[in-house]
Length: 154
Image (cartoon, rainbow, N blue to C red):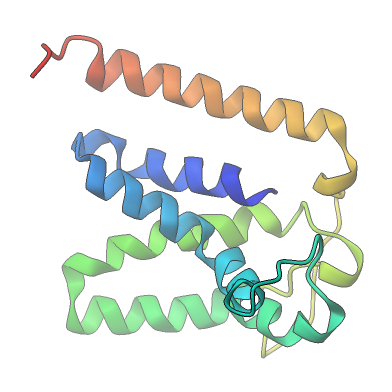
């Protein structure tokens, strides 16, 4: 799935709070696994169209449910109220598991296993992109109807 879509799903997780800062944070956290990988190149002033093969290790680390689960467990133990912020990041990985194939398939059990699933390659499928953004529009329509429609202007 593309990075923008991950951010929109991440922001939607916090829409019920009606707090734009939390929604923005959710969006950033939803994009974070990709932003970390691309951030290495952005810091150098160059963002390649695709992540170079040399970045596979970093990609696998940022897309590991094992490592995210460990961070979530630590947050739950020490800062329980912050554990909810793992949701957009974890959702990113869950969406990538069936939609990334080939070289950049999602090794969601890394470093324990390199198991991955390839249902379809999102980057090569126009219908998947259209359906995904159709779902996002529908989700934001529901959010608007549920939490924002009857708000008076400030």
